[in-house]
Length: 391
Image (cartoon, rainbow, N blue to C red):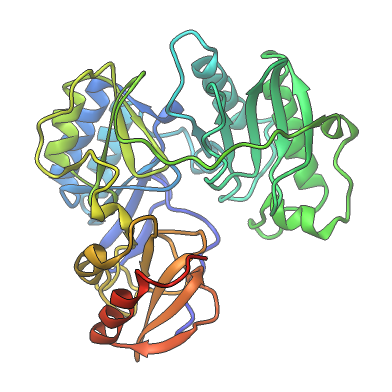
Protein backbone atom coordinates (compact mmCIF):
# COMPACT_ATOMS: atom_id res chain seq x y z
CA UNK A 1 0.00 0.00 0.00
CA UNK A 2 1.27 3.45 -0.85
CA UNK A 3 2.01 5.40 2.31
CA UNK A 4 0.08 8.69 2.42
CA UNK A 5 1.87 11.91 3.24
CA UNK A 6 0.96 12.98 6.78
CA UNK A 7 1.00 16.76 7.09
CA UNK A 8 0.60 16.78 10.89
CA UNK A 9 -1.73 19.76 10.66
CA UNK A 10 -5.14 20.56 9.27
CA UNK A 11 -5.79 23.16 6.58
CA UNK A 12 -7.11 26.53 7.61
CA UNK A 13 -8.11 29.69 5.83
CA UNK A 14 -4.77 31.42 6.38
CA UNK A 15 -2.84 28.18 5.92
CA UNK A 16 -4.56 26.37 3.04
CA UNK A 17 -3.49 22.91 1.91
CA UNK A 18 -2.75 22.11 -1.75
CA UNK A 19 -4.64 19.17 -3.19
CA UNK A 20 -5.38 17.63 -6.56
CA UNK A 21 -8.17 20.07 -7.30
CA UNK A 22 -6.62 23.26 -5.97
CA UNK A 23 -6.28 24.71 -2.49
CA UNK A 24 -8.29 23.37 0.45
CA UNK A 25 -9.46 26.23 2.67
CA UNK A 26 -11.01 25.34 6.03
CA UNK A 27 -13.17 27.81 7.94
CA UNK A 28 -13.69 27.60 11.69
CA UNK A 29 -16.87 29.55 12.52
CA UNK A 30 -16.53 31.36 15.88
CA UNK A 31 -18.39 29.34 18.48
CA UNK A 32 -19.40 26.85 15.79
CA UNK A 33 -22.09 29.24 14.55
CA UNK A 34 -22.82 31.21 11.38
CA UNK A 35 -25.07 34.25 11.38
CA UNK A 36 -27.50 34.50 8.45
CA UNK A 37 -25.26 37.13 6.83
CA UNK A 38 -22.17 34.93 7.26
CA UNK A 39 -23.92 31.85 5.84
CA UNK A 40 -25.22 33.68 2.80
CA UNK A 41 -21.95 35.53 2.28
CA UNK A 42 -19.96 32.30 2.50
CA UNK A 43 -22.26 30.68 -0.04
CA UNK A 44 -21.63 33.56 -2.42
CA UNK A 45 -17.86 33.32 -1.96
CA UNK A 46 -17.94 29.56 -2.61
CA UNK A 47 -19.79 30.15 -5.86
CA UNK A 48 -17.32 32.80 -6.96
CA UNK A 49 -13.94 31.43 -5.84
CA UNK A 50 -14.18 27.66 -5.18
CA UNK A 51 -16.21 24.58 -5.92
CA UNK A 52 -19.86 25.53 -5.28
CA UNK A 53 -20.10 22.62 -2.82
CA UNK A 54 -18.70 22.95 0.70
CA UNK A 55 -17.59 20.06 2.92
CA UNK A 56 -18.73 19.76 6.53
CA UNK A 57 -15.98 18.21 8.66
CA UNK A 58 -15.96 16.07 11.80
CA UNK A 59 -14.50 19.08 13.64
CA UNK A 60 -17.62 21.14 12.85
CA UNK A 61 -15.73 23.22 10.30
CA UNK A 62 -16.64 24.14 6.73
CA UNK A 63 -14.22 23.44 3.94
CA UNK A 64 -13.83 24.98 0.50
CA UNK A 65 -12.06 23.02 -2.25
CA UNK A 66 -10.83 23.86 -5.71
CA UNK A 67 -9.55 27.34 -4.83
CA UNK A 68 -7.05 28.57 -7.41
CA UNK A 69 -4.04 30.72 -6.59
CA UNK A 70 -5.75 33.61 -8.36
CA UNK A 71 -8.99 33.17 -6.41
CA UNK A 72 -7.34 32.84 -3.02
CA UNK A 73 -6.69 36.59 -2.31
CA UNK A 74 -10.25 37.77 -3.09
CA UNK A 75 -11.62 34.81 -1.13
CA UNK A 76 -9.59 35.88 1.89
CA UNK A 77 -10.82 39.45 1.60
CA UNK A 78 -14.39 38.19 1.51
CA UNK A 79 -13.91 35.92 4.53
CA UNK A 80 -12.29 38.76 6.46
CA UNK A 81 -15.24 41.02 5.72
CA UNK A 82 -17.56 38.32 7.10
CA UNK A 83 -15.49 37.91 10.29
CA UNK A 84 -14.60 34.31 9.44
CA UNK A 85 -10.79 34.36 9.59
CA UNK A 86 -8.28 34.95 12.37
CA UNK A 87 -5.56 37.56 12.63
CA UNK A 88 -2.76 35.03 11.95
CA UNK A 89 -2.25 31.39 11.01
CA UNK A 90 -0.89 30.73 14.52
CA UNK A 91 -4.08 32.08 16.08
CA UNK A 92 -6.15 30.08 13.62
CA UNK A 93 -4.43 26.79 14.48
CA UNK A 94 -4.83 27.37 18.23
CA UNK A 95 -8.54 28.21 18.02
CA UNK A 96 -9.42 24.55 17.56
CA UNK A 97 -12.63 24.58 19.58
CA UNK A 98 -15.59 22.23 19.16
CA UNK A 99 -18.84 23.52 20.72
CA UNK A 100 -21.93 21.43 21.40
CA UNK A 101 -24.69 22.48 19.01
CA UNK A 102 -27.34 21.85 21.68
CA UNK A 103 -26.77 24.89 23.88
CA UNK A 104 -29.61 27.13 24.97
CA UNK A 105 -29.68 30.90 25.11
CA UNK A 106 -28.45 32.08 28.52
CA UNK A 107 -26.85 28.79 29.61
CA UNK A 108 -23.32 30.26 29.48
CA UNK A 109 -22.04 28.23 26.52
CA UNK A 110 -21.73 31.16 24.12
CA UNK A 111 -19.87 33.25 26.68
CA UNK A 112 -17.50 30.38 27.47
CA UNK A 113 -16.86 29.71 23.78
CA UNK A 114 -15.99 33.36 23.20
CA UNK A 115 -13.77 33.57 26.30
CA UNK A 116 -11.91 30.35 25.51
CA UNK A 117 -11.48 31.33 21.87
CA UNK A 118 -10.00 34.69 22.90
CA UNK A 119 -7.71 33.02 25.43
CA UNK A 120 -6.39 30.54 22.87
CA UNK A 121 -5.27 33.30 20.50
CA UNK A 122 -3.73 35.54 23.17
CA UNK A 123 0.07 35.94 23.43
CA UNK A 124 -0.03 33.98 26.71
CA UNK A 125 -1.56 30.89 25.09
CA UNK A 126 0.67 27.81 24.73
CA UNK A 127 2.00 26.85 21.29
CA UNK A 128 -0.19 23.81 20.75
CA UNK A 129 0.00 21.31 17.86
CA UNK A 130 -2.32 22.03 14.96
CA UNK A 131 -4.57 19.04 15.66
CA UNK A 132 -4.83 19.63 19.42
CA UNK A 133 -8.44 20.47 20.21
CA UNK A 134 -10.88 21.51 22.92
CA UNK A 135 -14.48 20.28 23.31
CA UNK A 136 -16.94 22.61 25.02
CA UNK A 137 -19.70 20.12 25.80
CA UNK A 138 -21.87 22.05 28.23
CA UNK A 139 -25.41 21.13 27.29
CA UNK A 140 -27.75 19.15 29.53
CA UNK A 141 -25.69 16.01 28.82
CA UNK A 142 -22.36 15.38 27.03
CA UNK A 143 -22.79 14.69 23.32
CA UNK A 144 -19.23 15.17 22.03
CA UNK A 145 -17.47 12.21 23.65
CA UNK A 146 -17.30 10.49 20.26
CA UNK A 147 -15.63 13.51 18.64
CA UNK A 148 -11.88 14.02 18.74
CA UNK A 149 -10.64 16.35 21.50
CA UNK A 150 -7.71 16.67 23.90
CA UNK A 151 -9.24 18.81 26.64
CA UNK A 152 -12.92 18.47 27.47
CA UNK A 153 -15.20 20.83 29.38
CA UNK A 154 -18.56 19.51 30.53
CA UNK A 155 -21.34 20.64 32.80
CA UNK A 156 -22.10 18.70 35.97
CA UNK A 157 -24.28 19.04 39.07
CA UNK A 158 -21.81 21.33 40.85
CA UNK A 159 -20.87 23.50 37.86
CA UNK A 160 -18.30 22.34 35.30
CA UNK A 161 -15.63 19.67 34.90
CA UNK A 162 -12.36 20.22 32.99
CA UNK A 163 -10.36 17.13 32.10
CA UNK A 164 -7.71 15.66 29.81
CA UNK A 165 -8.93 13.19 27.22
CA UNK A 166 -6.88 9.99 27.14
CA UNK A 167 -7.12 6.99 24.84
CA UNK A 168 -9.82 5.53 27.10
CA UNK A 169 -11.04 8.84 28.45
CA UNK A 170 -9.76 10.38 31.66
CA UNK A 171 -10.98 9.00 35.01
CA UNK A 172 -10.80 12.33 36.82
CA UNK A 173 -10.92 16.05 36.20
CA UNK A 174 -10.97 19.42 37.93
CA UNK A 175 -14.29 20.83 39.17
CA UNK A 176 -14.77 24.44 38.16
CA UNK A 177 -17.09 27.39 38.42
CA UNK A 178 -17.88 29.21 35.18
CA UNK A 179 -15.15 31.75 35.96
CA UNK A 180 -12.56 28.99 36.49
CA UNK A 181 -13.22 27.03 33.28
CA UNK A 182 -10.98 28.98 30.91
CA UNK A 183 -8.02 29.35 33.32
CA UNK A 184 -8.15 25.62 34.09
CA UNK A 185 -8.32 24.66 30.41
CA UNK A 186 -5.30 26.86 29.70
CA UNK A 187 -3.43 25.42 32.72
CA UNK A 188 -3.96 21.92 31.35
CA UNK A 189 -2.81 22.99 27.89
CA UNK A 190 0.35 24.56 29.34
CA UNK A 191 1.00 21.33 31.28
CA UNK A 192 0.68 19.33 28.06
CA UNK A 193 3.38 21.41 26.36
CA UNK A 194 5.66 21.54 29.42
CA UNK A 195 5.42 17.74 29.78
CA UNK A 196 6.72 17.15 26.26
CA UNK A 197 3.40 16.51 24.56
CA UNK A 198 4.22 18.68 21.54
CA UNK A 199 7.09 17.59 19.33
CA UNK A 200 7.82 19.34 16.04
CA UNK A 201 4.31 20.73 15.92
CA UNK A 202 2.61 17.38 16.50
CA UNK A 203 1.16 15.60 19.51
CA UNK A 204 -2.10 14.63 21.19
CA UNK A 205 -3.14 14.35 24.81
CA UNK A 206 -3.96 10.64 24.60
CA UNK A 207 -0.44 9.81 23.42
CA UNK A 208 1.13 11.81 26.26
CA UNK A 209 -1.07 10.21 28.91
CA UNK A 210 -0.32 6.76 27.53
CA UNK A 211 3.38 7.35 28.15
CA UNK A 212 2.64 8.19 31.81
CA UNK A 213 5.88 10.15 32.04
CA UNK A 214 4.35 13.05 33.96
CA UNK A 215 1.42 13.00 36.38
CA UNK A 216 -1.46 15.35 35.75
CA UNK A 217 -1.57 18.41 38.03
CA UNK A 218 -3.19 17.39 41.33
CA UNK A 219 -6.29 19.54 40.88
CA UNK A 220 -7.23 17.44 37.82
CA UNK A 221 -7.44 14.32 39.98
CA UNK A 222 -10.25 15.55 42.24
CA UNK A 223 -13.55 14.59 40.60
CA UNK A 224 -14.40 11.38 38.68
CA UNK A 225 -15.47 11.81 35.09
CA UNK A 226 -19.06 10.55 34.83
CA UNK A 227 -20.02 7.92 32.30
CA UNK A 228 -22.09 9.11 29.36
CA UNK A 229 -24.21 7.01 27.00
CA UNK A 230 -23.35 6.82 23.32
CA UNK A 231 -25.04 9.58 21.33
CA UNK A 232 -27.00 9.00 18.15
CA UNK A 233 -26.78 12.30 16.25
CA UNK A 234 -30.33 13.60 15.88
CA UNK A 235 -32.00 14.72 12.69
CA UNK A 236 -35.19 16.70 12.35
CA UNK A 237 -36.75 18.86 15.03
CA UNK A 238 -34.92 19.39 18.33
CA UNK A 239 -35.59 21.94 21.11
CA UNK A 240 -33.05 24.35 19.60
CA UNK A 241 -34.42 24.19 16.04
CA UNK A 242 -34.04 21.73 13.19
CA UNK A 243 -31.06 19.49 12.31
CA UNK A 244 -30.47 18.59 8.67
CA UNK A 245 -27.74 16.39 7.19
CA UNK A 246 -26.11 15.99 3.80
CA UNK A 247 -24.77 13.07 1.77
CA UNK A 248 -21.06 12.71 2.60
CA UNK A 249 -21.31 16.03 4.42
CA UNK A 250 -21.38 17.89 1.10
CA UNK A 251 -23.28 21.15 1.28
CA UNK A 252 -24.18 22.90 -2.00
CA UNK A 253 -23.64 26.65 -1.79
CA UNK A 254 -27.26 27.46 -2.79
CA UNK A 255 -28.50 25.19 0.00
CA UNK A 256 -26.26 26.96 2.51
CA UNK A 257 -27.67 30.31 1.39
CA UNK A 258 -31.26 29.05 1.64
CA UNK A 259 -30.73 27.61 5.12
CA UNK A 260 -29.02 30.81 6.24
CA UNK A 261 -32.10 32.75 5.21
CA UNK A 262 -34.08 30.73 7.79
CA UNK A 263 -31.91 31.68 10.77
CA UNK A 264 -28.44 31.31 12.35
CA UNK A 265 -26.75 27.97 11.68
CA UNK A 266 -24.84 25.82 14.16
CA UNK A 267 -22.30 23.45 12.61
CA UNK A 268 -22.22 19.96 14.16
CA UNK A 269 -19.40 17.36 14.22
CA UNK A 270 -21.81 14.92 12.52
CA UNK A 271 -21.66 16.77 9.20
CA UNK A 272 -25.03 18.37 9.72
CA UNK A 273 -26.38 21.84 10.44
CA UNK A 274 -28.79 23.00 13.14
CA UNK A 275 -31.06 25.81 11.95
CA UNK A 276 -31.76 27.85 15.08
CA UNK A 277 -35.43 28.35 15.90
CA UNK A 278 -36.80 26.41 12.90
CA UNK A 279 -40.03 24.58 13.79
CA UNK A 280 -40.61 22.84 10.44
CA UNK A 281 -38.36 20.83 8.13
CA UNK A 282 -36.93 22.97 5.32
CA UNK A 283 -38.34 21.96 1.94
CA UNK A 284 -34.98 21.85 0.16
CA UNK A 285 -33.76 19.16 -2.20
CA UNK A 286 -30.96 16.86 -1.05
CA UNK A 287 -31.38 17.24 2.72
CA UNK A 288 -31.07 14.20 4.97
CA UNK A 289 -33.79 14.50 7.62
CA UNK A 290 -34.48 10.89 8.64
CA UNK A 291 -32.26 8.67 10.77
CA UNK A 292 -33.09 5.64 8.60
CA UNK A 293 -31.77 7.27 5.41
CA UNK A 294 -29.26 4.80 3.93
CA UNK A 295 -26.92 7.68 3.04
CA UNK A 296 -26.08 7.87 6.74
CA UNK A 297 -24.63 4.35 6.63
CA UNK A 298 -21.61 5.34 4.55
CA UNK A 299 -18.73 7.75 5.05
CA UNK A 300 -16.31 8.62 2.26
CA UNK A 301 -13.52 11.11 1.75
CA UNK A 302 -12.99 13.20 -1.38
CA UNK A 303 -11.07 10.39 -3.05
CA UNK A 304 -9.33 10.57 -6.42
CA UNK A 305 -8.81 12.68 -8.41
CA UNK A 306 -9.65 15.51 -6.00
CA UNK A 307 -7.19 14.29 -3.36
CA UNK A 308 -3.63 13.45 -4.40
CA UNK A 309 -3.34 11.01 -1.47
CA UNK A 310 -6.19 8.81 -2.73
CA UNK A 311 -5.54 5.66 -4.76
CA UNK A 312 -9.08 5.53 -6.20
CA UNK A 313 -12.43 7.29 -6.38
CA UNK A 314 -14.51 6.71 -3.26
CA UNK A 315 -17.89 8.43 -3.22
CA UNK A 316 -19.39 6.75 -6.25
CA UNK A 317 -18.63 3.35 -4.76
CA UNK A 318 -19.92 4.40 -1.34
CA UNK A 319 -23.15 5.67 -2.91
CA UNK A 320 -23.61 2.33 -4.71
CA UNK A 321 -22.95 0.32 -1.55
CA UNK A 322 -25.06 2.38 0.87
CA UNK A 323 -28.32 0.39 0.38
CA UNK A 324 -26.41 -2.84 1.11
CA UNK A 325 -25.05 -1.72 4.49
CA UNK A 326 -27.14 -3.27 7.30
CA UNK A 327 -29.06 -0.92 9.57
CA UNK A 328 -26.96 0.08 12.56
CA UNK A 329 -23.64 -0.27 10.76
CA UNK A 330 -21.40 2.27 9.06
CA UNK A 331 -19.21 1.57 6.04
CA UNK A 332 -16.18 3.83 5.65
CA UNK A 333 -14.72 4.06 2.14
CA UNK A 334 -11.29 5.69 2.34
CA UNK A 335 -9.01 6.75 -0.49
CA UNK A 336 -5.91 6.06 1.61
CA UNK A 337 -4.85 4.85 5.05
CA UNK A 338 -5.27 8.30 6.66
CA UNK A 339 -9.02 7.75 7.02
CA UNK A 340 -10.00 11.43 7.02
CA UNK A 341 -13.76 10.81 6.64
CA UNK A 342 -14.17 8.50 9.66
CA UNK A 343 -11.38 8.27 12.25
CA UNK A 344 -13.17 5.65 14.37
CA UNK A 345 -13.19 1.87 14.05
CA UNK A 346 -15.90 0.48 11.77
CA UNK A 347 -16.34 -1.62 8.64
CA UNK A 348 -13.74 -0.03 6.38
CA UNK A 349 -12.61 -0.17 2.75
CA UNK A 350 -9.24 1.35 1.86
CA UNK A 351 -8.26 2.05 -1.73
CA UNK A 352 -4.93 0.67 -2.96
CA UNK A 353 -3.31 0.36 -6.37
CA UNK A 354 -4.53 -3.27 -6.49
CA UNK A 355 -8.12 -2.68 -5.38
CA UNK A 356 -9.80 -2.14 -2.00
CA UNK A 357 -8.62 -3.68 1.26
CA UNK A 358 -11.37 -4.66 3.70
CA UNK A 359 -11.15 -4.24 7.47
CA UNK A 360 -14.02 -5.90 9.32
CA UNK A 361 -13.77 -3.58 12.32
CA UNK A 362 -11.00 -1.02 12.43
CA UNK A 363 -9.71 2.24 11.03
CA UNK A 364 -8.22 2.87 7.61
CA UNK A 365 -4.77 2.33 9.16
CA UNK A 366 -5.64 -1.13 10.54
CA UNK A 367 -4.32 -4.36 9.05
CA UNK A 368 -6.68 -5.63 6.33
CA UNK A 369 -8.72 -8.80 6.73
CA UNK A 370 -9.08 -9.13 2.96
CA UNK A 371 -6.99 -7.46 0.28
CA UNK A 372 -7.33 -6.24 -3.30
CA UNK A 373 -11.11 -6.63 -3.56
CA UNK A 374 -12.98 -5.42 -6.63
CA UNK A 375 -16.49 -3.95 -6.62
CA UNK A 376 -18.19 -7.30 -7.27
CA UNK A 377 -16.42 -8.95 -4.33
CA UNK A 378 -17.33 -6.04 -2.05
CA UNK A 379 -20.99 -6.24 -3.06
CA UNK A 380 -21.03 -9.97 -2.37
CA UNK A 381 -19.47 -9.43 1.04
CA UNK A 382 -22.03 -6.81 2.03
CA UNK A 383 -24.91 -8.98 0.85
CA UNK A 384 -23.82 -11.64 3.36
CA UNK A 385 -23.12 -9.13 6.13
CA UNK A 386 -26.75 -8.76 7.22
CA UNK A 387 -26.65 -12.19 8.83
CA UNK A 388 -23.19 -11.90 10.35
CA UNK A 389 -22.79 -11.22 14.10
CA UNK A 390 -22.13 -7.57 14.92
CA UNK A 391 -18.84 -6.52 16.48
